[in-house]
Structures are given as C-alpha cells and as structure tokens.
Image 1 (cartoon, rainbow, N blue to C red):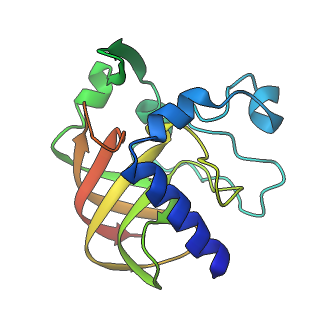
Image 2 (image 1 turned 135 degrees about the horizontal axis):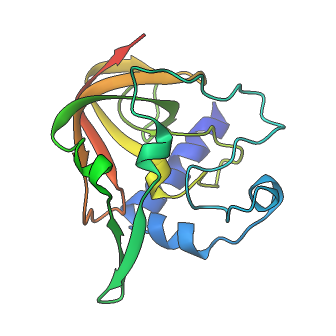
Amino acid sequence: MKRIVRRRAAVLTLLSAGLLPALAQAQTGGGAAAAAGIPAGTGPGVHSPNSPFAPLQERSDVVPWSVLTDVKTKVEKNRMLPVFPAPVMALHQKSQRVQGFMMPLEPGEKQKHFLVSSVPLTCSFCVPGGPESMVEVKTKVPVRYTLEPVVVEGQFAVLKDDPYGLYYRIIDAVAVK
C-alpha cells in the first residue's frame, strides 16, 4: 500500500506541476523501450517483458491506444502542444470506452479521479509513456482500485492545451466489463 501511495504522489506531483510533457520529452531511451526503438516517456509506452501484469487484451468495443497515441507535437511560445489527427478529433465530446491500467491520484480503496494508462507502471516514480498514453478519468461513482486492467466509459474530451499537460479526459465515467 505504501508503494501505491508513493506512486500516486509522484504522478500527482507531475500533473500539478504541469511537468508531464516535459518529463516525456526529457527522458531518453533505455531498457525495453530503447530495444523497441521507442524513446522512454513517449508514445504508448512499452509493456516490460518482466512485468507481472499481462498486456491489455484487444477489444473491439474500446478506443485503441494506437489511435490515441498517433499524436504529433508542435512548439508554440516555448510550449509543446499536441496536434491531433482527424480520427482523434472525431472522438471529442462523444461517449467513448477506454481500457487501461488504473493510476490513482488520491489514496483510498475506491477512486473517483484517476488516470488510465496503456501500460502498467514498472516504477513508482516513472511515467510509463507520454501524455498520449494516459487518459484522465472522473467517475460518477467510485471505482474499486485494482492492478488489473479496467474499462471505463464516459464523455471523452480531446484537450488541446491542458494546464496539466494531459491530452485526454473522460468525465461522468462508469466502469464497464
């Protein structure tokens, strides 16, 4: 439980400081990410072969991470901003389902505000991928914290200039099976 609290604190610190995009850009390749040719902290992240958690199973009823991570960035006034392709923009302000690994932002067994990531965390202080690999979730009713993948459905928002550096948010979400 202490590890979970430390992980939450680290992610919350990154979010509140607006450092998530900067961290994603500052990290360089290493380990499984480098072996796959993907710099750490960018894209969907890499599911470590040493992870005790199985990778996400493909589902036809959720938005694929390959769509969400197909984002470019541009520099504007010393800031990095996302440039979303048409398939991503088509998701905006519509009910969508997303599957991923829960990253709580507050302590507690049940969560109403958390992140969903395309890959599980392998380190309490590491971001598994870039901001395009996470969706902020705000639920109607609390969801029980789990290390297993979750699926949530709600009003999906594409964030063009979020102060916390996030690219996606789902509000009024509910957990689905």
